[in-house]
Length: 171
Image (cartoon, rainbow, N blue to C red):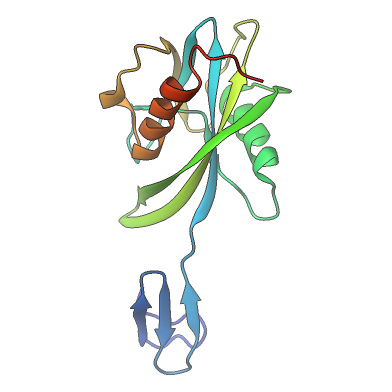
């Protein structure tokens, strides 16, 4: 980014890891971490994975979820994303942990913090892959192919889940 969003001059210069200042009008622009949500959805010892339909990481495994919209709580975002991507509604989700992520999109790296929730289902639902999901796959929670998982934050969340939650009684 070179052009100032306030005065339009080509005098925007980076002054820190997350801020830029305009030499012409002194405007300061911050690129703060974005919030994102994802769900580890479990049924009968298996984890539900979404196959990414588009870039970044098209065709790779991911957890259902996405970015939190303006004026939306993380719980509302998770509910919206599960409905948009899978047609899944009215599920009980329990917060598990958060992990930092770098999300490359259109030549820009965005920083996010991914809030991971657990959803345990008593019955396997009929799901419809939609929005940014090309398909779904159920994979045994102990046999996750980490090399096929799209993002480092999701790999870390799944490893955390295997170590701290899988096979353990949850409340």
